[in-house]
Image 1: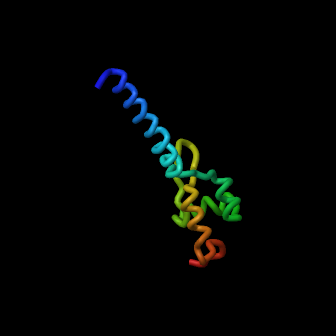
Image 2: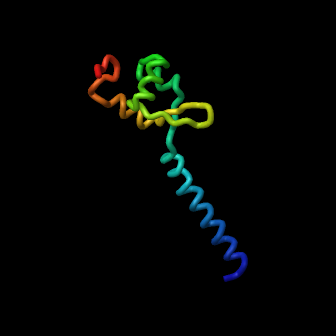
Image 3: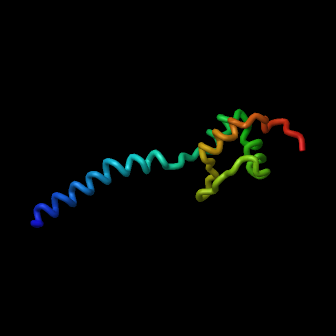
Length: 89
């Protein structure tokens, strides 16, 4: 194998990885929502969201000084049959 053939093979391999693998990684990436976005989706106030997070009804993730929520987990909360609001202990 000549040097030019090796370089061309290497370029082809890198191109294949960039074209085929990187888009899949972006699709698998987790999307995070802010507190405001979550409260709006669930139609609750920010203090209620904080309460639900402290009770463990909704999982929040602290990233630096911000608390973010995974979109897939919020969608799962929306799919629940039982309402979170007015739940008696």
